[in-house]
Image (cartoon, rainbow, N blue to C red; front, side, top):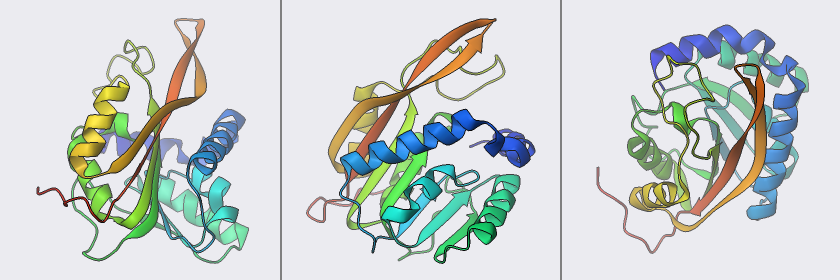
Length: 218
């Protein structure tokens, strides 16, 4: 994620959860993950690009400890307030950008999740390799993001990716070291484009870190 994106998201953080559509999408995304992956209440979870924690909180009653991680300071501040208000132990929020530095060696999670993050990242293969490194052996990865679109989802200044084809996602995940890959459409986001309502597909990609597979180099 670029520094521009981090600043923009920080500026949006205070009112991010006011949009009930975002809350409902997070609920739907959590259900899709739970339908695809055999969640366990003992699992540790990393939500990368967590924002205010909508997805993580929607999954919280199905898993154990959760780390909400985001590069936008404003999002982390709001997430920490939400954690304090909910009173649930075992959740913390950290500011960190994995595209700039990996996690400390040995810090790994049973489940790594992200939602609408990858299309903001310039070097997706690098991020996926670092998320692979953050996944425990036998652990799972789940990412939700845009299906291919024609550049209408963002404004003209956007420099990220206009969605991902299923083939491209499968190749990127396999290249990072993941196996047991699945990609399927799970929800839609409706936005106005030049005054006209448009629907954009969102996929769920899941994968697993197989202990028998060689760890990629780089």
